[in-house]
Image 1 (cartoon, rainbow, N blue to C red):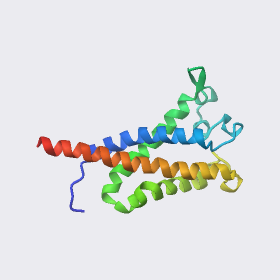
Image 2 (cartoon, rainbow, N blue to C red):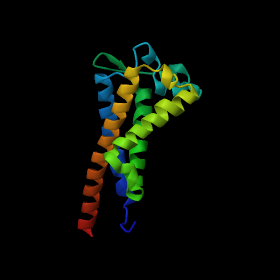
Image 3 (tube, helix red, strand yellow):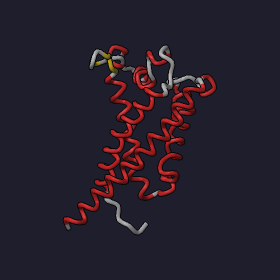
Length: 170
C-alpha cells in the first residue's frame, strides 16, 4: 500500500470509536436483550472472569446510579473488548482493506460468529450455539453488526479529522 498510515491517529480513532460503539451496543441490548434475566444473573463477562479465577464478589461488584445497581466489572470487560477490537479494526483496515467490506458489518458478524458461536461455547462461558435461544442469536448478531458499523463510521471520521489537522499544521 502506497499511502502512509498514521498509527497514532488510527489508534486514537479506534479508541474513541470503541467507547462510542460500546455505548451503542449497551443500548442495543436494552432494546433487544440477548439473555433471559435468569441467564443474565451471571453474564458472559462475569463468567469469563470467574473462569479465570476471579472471585464472584469481584465479578458481581456493582455501583448504584439513579437507584439501579450496575455491574461495573462487566462494563470494564465490555468496553475493553469494544475498544480493543475498534483499535485493531481502525489500524488493520488501512493495511487489509477487505476487513472493511460492508463498512464493518461483515467484520462484526465475523466477531459474533467467532466468539458467540465458537470460542465462548468451547470455553464453557456460554452454552453451545445450538442451546442458545434464537433471540440471543438475533440480538447478538444484529448488535455486532451495528456495533462494528458504528466503529467504522466513527473511526474513519476521527482518523480523517486527526490526519487533516496533522497535515494542516505541517
